Length: 235
Image 1 (spheres, one colour):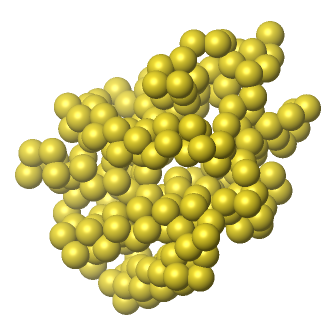
Image 2 (spheres, rainbow, N blue to C red):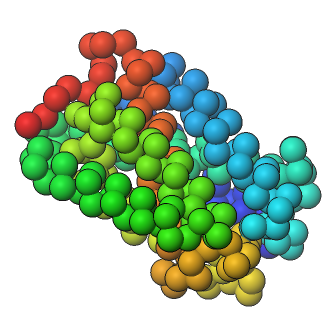
């Protein structure tokens, strides 16, 4: 049965957020028309280097945990990852806004976090150019962060709160994928192409990878949403 583990993780991640998307207070279903094109575009961006990194053995997948269906030489579970994980995380982000509409970080704190993240990402690019996952992930996340900071800064003061709260489920899901509590990792990494620093079994770069993926989804959703449904400026 372990060949269904990655698929089970995908489905378990999305099922409760999907059900509660129709809750009268949350009403995330009203954003579906914006979420799905946003998810498709962000998935295309991330899958393009997922395919390349897999082909170069920068990371790979343990066949013992897969159902043996592949598209573009990626397991079907990996493609579903880019649907299920963004859906659950974006749902959580907008749920926090719906439940706590007046809560958000101050502009000064938001700017401090943004600038600090940008500095860290630039340093990762400059000093670790020889490590492809580290450098490219830093570049990609920095690009998304700067674009959001310039064009949709009102998203960040809620996003940072949401991402902080999502770190626990992130550690649980990504921990399973990278080998926590199971015999071997579902997703393995070539440590020659990353910093070799792990949070339990999770490469530290994955924190920035996840941040960039979710922020890109939210950014695109806000672009596609009708103005009446867009996130308003919170000061």
